[in-house]
Image (tube, helix red, strand yellow):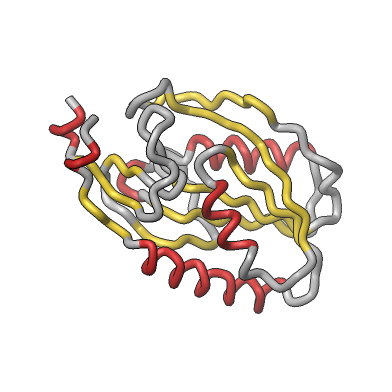
Length: 179
């Protein structure tokens, strides 16, 4: 892939402004209640870091690794739980933080896992990006940053074969440029 073909979809400024708006909503919802954030690695780590810096309530950060990609640009159609060890979340407010909801497979897997293993006080799902056009499961995030079309997105945590997560913006590549 040639990064020169990357077109900017959301600038660093747009992303940070939207994150602040999301944090304001969450601050109003949770107030002073304790929250456990569950960050889905690796893609959501940049979003989680910037979001949690804007949250005012006491919180604990947890991390899990799930994967539904074969590498490159194609999804495997099933979720692989690489590392899903979590503390006791019974009676806790849980905020799942994800980079993108596209097919909804990962989101459904994680929500089902939490519902089967814990009786949380509340479970909310936050995704930076919501790609409704690719959805195969009836999953809607409680909070999301931007709705996106069916493009291959790169940057700000989103990768191409492990690269480009460190970009400060989100760009896209035309599918014809990936071939």
